[in-house]
Length: 496
Image 1 (cartoon, rainbow, N blue to C red):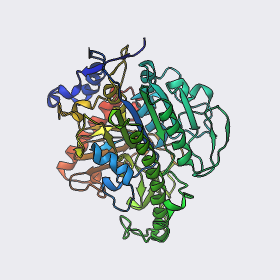
Image 2: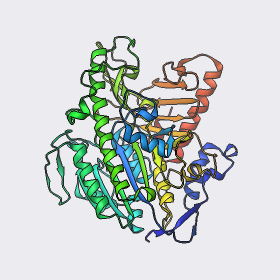
Image 3: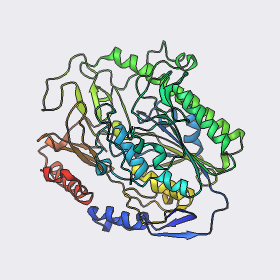
């Protein structure tokens, strides 16, 4: 069945008294209620959607999100012009699994994608052909759809973005490419070197798509590969403010930190973010010029967070230490230079939604939002009703965005089975106050943090002898087990 273009009035979990619902039942209720939709008359004008998605964006790597080292006046317009989601997270802090969650509202392990897809060693791995995606439903609802940029959900033709709802694609199917003169797939389907800066090339395609479809409703996914490494080269104007900068870094006194290397990488990372910002400005300016701004929802977010020296590391959930000397190897299958983690710095992403006429500029929401929630939320924002029952792990966030409710489940389930660079099976849960990570692969590798009193996650309370901490550990462990059971996690048999 095809999707119908309607305005959604969804009965969601947001309207339940959740304090009376056991956590292991909440997911079941969410799956059922996500399909209970009452249609109102056809919307007079379907909004366009521009979904801007970066790669490796640190949680506060936007000036408007709080890190003033960054020069992002254009991205800031989205944050100031709509809603800033201050507690926006992904459920797996690495590329491919997070992208699965975005496009399908399912945990990536359900599709046997547990780590970033290695296009050399994992040529056959990718999104299954029967996966239901939100771009498919946008296309069925009459939208023109396109993806320009990074895909990273499989390299075979059966994994191609056009098999999953995008009518046009130009970019990279694999995980990476240089920031200049990339070898990429063109709109004609050729794979060849294209000359220019990669951010600019992807944006050029996006601008052409907007101009060609300005009289029709469109869904544009602009997936930058920046600020993923390598960060340089960038255009001279993007490098100029940072080339001689002595940047502040988050924890210069961290034991044995390689401060000079952190500063060097930070300069380059700042420039890469500025190159993204400049291109975001090009998109926003075109929407203004074509008088499309008032009817276009603009989203800015990222596939996961990033560590810029925090915890003495660099990268995301598969972080590497950035120390002068690494500590002794402690765990089998985890090299001394690796630090697999489920820290907030790896999971939190800078997120803003500009929805003219619906979201008041300057709005801030602190409810916990996850990448699994994008699928049902985007459908509701566009007024699209699925024509059949869908099994979604995420929930429609629009009742919060539109001020119809503040009731919202603040807990999220976390999981990452790392197999490149180290072997781990991390499962966890995050509540507003507590974080628990259990590594099923390594007995005794358990981390628990009191986020209220230790937001930087520096003191592991899983080893505390205090009764209050033992009680929390037991409670959180039960929550993780319940989530594993409710999602059919094949690693449940490994649970301690």
